[in-house]
Length: 529
Image 1 (cartoon, rainbow, N blue to C red):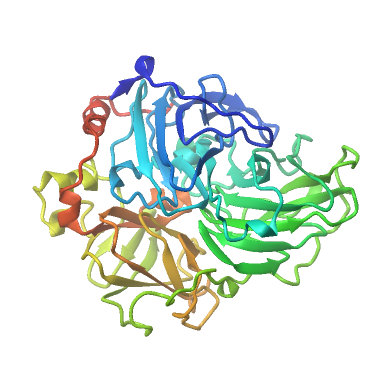
Image 2 (cartoon, one colour; image 1 turned 180 degrees about the horizontal axis):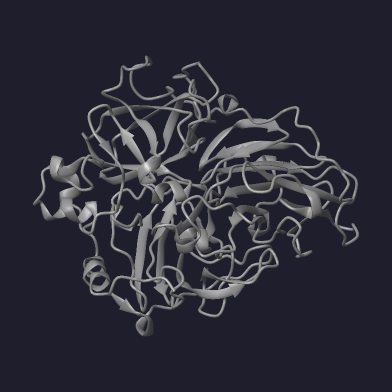
């Protein structure tokens, strides 16, 4: 375990654009700072590549396909109105052979205590695309600890379709809350939508909006990342279409749309051809809760052509009506291969399960049931990974009770999850894998031949929605599957898959990992001031 005073210092590479990139080997400082991204000043939990460069969103972390990431997270948190311990999840990375570095508290680790640091080191040899990182400790990322990640592929199969793909073409969408998460309540309403860290509250001050600059007759690969704690957004850019080429780190067959409904945790790369007259155009991200619409520049940013005046587009410009919105079933992998794994028939996987979600209002918690067990996830004092490494627990004894499912190795798993439960639509994320979406929300068709592959899927808002996914258990580890509405995860909407327990028992986390729990457990229980 490294103390702050002995923390490694890595080189920070600075480039021009909306984000200054760091990585793949870097320090990542986590500390408190007052910011006012929507004109309202509050203390937040922020990340930076140096102690004096904290920012929201956190710095862009980049690598090239084949790189090993070594990210030394240094906890300097002191504001006791929020959590002062932390952990980081590297969203979308499979962590093959490094489940200890996945990040979720209670599943793969104890939190990093304030005044200490922890080095996350993991390889991603076969992954490239758009990812992100965020705290996976209670609802801490809602207080600001979230940022984008990109793994560039020099042999990207779509590279002939765009001219620019760099720090300046990353677009992040975030909800923002003026109360600290621990005191915000179970289901707080966002005060603002932030695009690249800037936005306006409805009827608030005229705070600055994010500006994304383009040159006419140039094609841009924009990487759209939803770092939301709750809302999904309908995203569009006035006067322009978007050609989707990547979904959650997987290249897809090009699909032109004029709007994208994006759920918490999801990512899309799209090509935008800057072929319109020089001017300023609204970028719109309309949320499904909070204050919708675009009055006073809310839920908006600006696409500015080189040579345009530095002013906002006409605020009276009505939002265009979408005529070609993204439909998930229209997305197909660029490399279809043999389609979804296993026999192409519903219920014909090696392991088939249906998971039902219920909100228990009297107890303010979510439960997930497979028909036999009904559990609500609460992080156990001893993380699931450590329970398994201790070899003191049978699979049936793993905690949280009725919430850990053992999965055998090298089998096809099919999971069906009905929609329309309380708090819908739930965006479900699986750690350690991506998955084939056999049936999407809003569809009654099973597609085993060329379904989209992703790592976050919306379960939909209708009782008739019956989302079905498939994956293969080829990556041993305790992997949490949860709703990416962070407030719902805090209320128990998660299960843990203990995949290939014999292989997990042979894993070897670094020595510093063994110090996380003793150091954290020696702290007094935190009270929020």
